[in-house]
Amino acid sequence: MTTLAGAGSSVQRGRSLAAHWQRWRQYLIPVFSLLSFALLWELVSRSGLVDDTLLPPPSRILVTFIRLAGPGEGGRPDYLIIKHTASTIGLLISGFAISAIISTVIGVLMGISQRVYEWFNPIVTFFMPIPSFTLIFVFILWLGLGAPTVILTIIVGASFPILYSASAGVRSCDQKMIWAAQTAGCTRMQVFFKVLLPSAMGYIITGQKLALGRAWRAVIAAEIFASTEYGLGFMIQDASSFLDTEAMFAAIITVGITGLVLENLAFRYIERATIERWGMTGDKNM
Image (cartoon, rainbow, N blue to C red; front, side, top):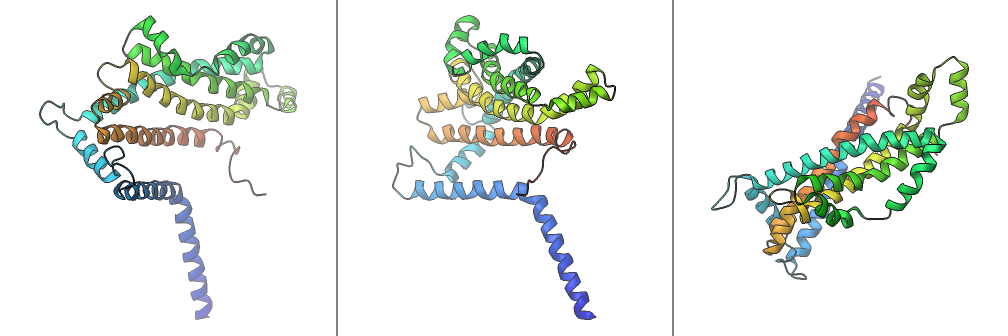
């Protein structure tokens, strides 16, 4: 009897550990992955195989980051990297929010209406291959240096994945589901919100995830050329001009970490509230 009780307790502990691992693995695996990459980088930088002035080790970059995140010394402003990061995030959110709203609406209309699709598809196809950073100089001519040029670059850079994904999501909805809803007496608005939108939401969120990556590239490129005071792109350009590679890499790493955090914060809750709630995602056993 004691043996059975002990075995049951062991099984229970095993299940508890497995449950805790499943809960924390989404946080632990990325952390261990990034730490492994940082360790490899540190070893390569200190091995003498490369000039550590051009590729400083992460430990020195971390010291520089802490110094730039604190009170200023000499003529350097206080909390410099925090101000650069806040400026970039503000511009990114502004441009991405405008792009997400407008592009999602147009993409859904393209999916619903064949005429709208035929009208917009050639325009989207024409502009899709053009990198958004090549338009920065056009926007500078139109708007000058500063935030409006950066925001417009973000809007253009983020629009096309959202357009295509929203359109594809609506067009991929099974027609039989629409007929079934209509047969049950649903109105057009009910069909849209109960059938079309849930069916397309996985596509829409995927498009917005892709668009967020393009928006990050757009905001950094635009800040390099168009920002006049603050922004991580401006910081990268300014640091490279003075061969301050530690500050330059601190800004680049801040871009990556901030993007990772923003994507997880923004889309994890959206997915839980939509496609996971509707049972449209999960592990697929094959």
